[in-house]
Length: 171
Image 1 (cartoon, rainbow, N blue to C red):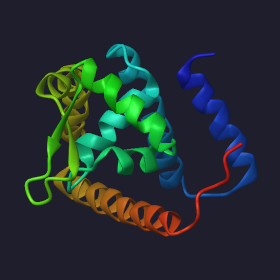
Image 2: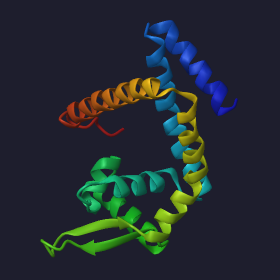
Image 3: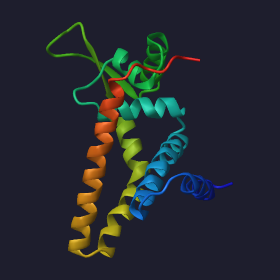
Image 4: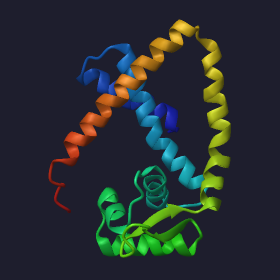
């Protein structure tokens, strides 16, 4: 079964359980496909999914995070996090840098080569997504932007509320 038809099946199952406006279904599909995009990108970069997720966390963290915070974000032990960082550093994907304010702290940074590879793989997708703008009037674009920004804010709130909860027990 292809990724697309699997998504259709998931949506059909969800629609039988809950009612939602069509706009919500469209956003849920984009969200679902975002996960599949992570898998596809990892495959294209010849990375394990966890390695790709680690790079994403490192690239989007502000301020930069260290190995311990990366382990927490990935839900893995600190020992596994250290192995992961060591492996990504040996492969040239990550760099450890001493914090300029606290020399005891190590911050993780994606290497320029890793960033370049990710951008190279995603550029065709970004180009086609950018071209979609032309299919909508300026007023429609404004409405879409307002909806997506508001949806992102609610997702951030949900994530923030979830981070206050204790982690699920390991199996």
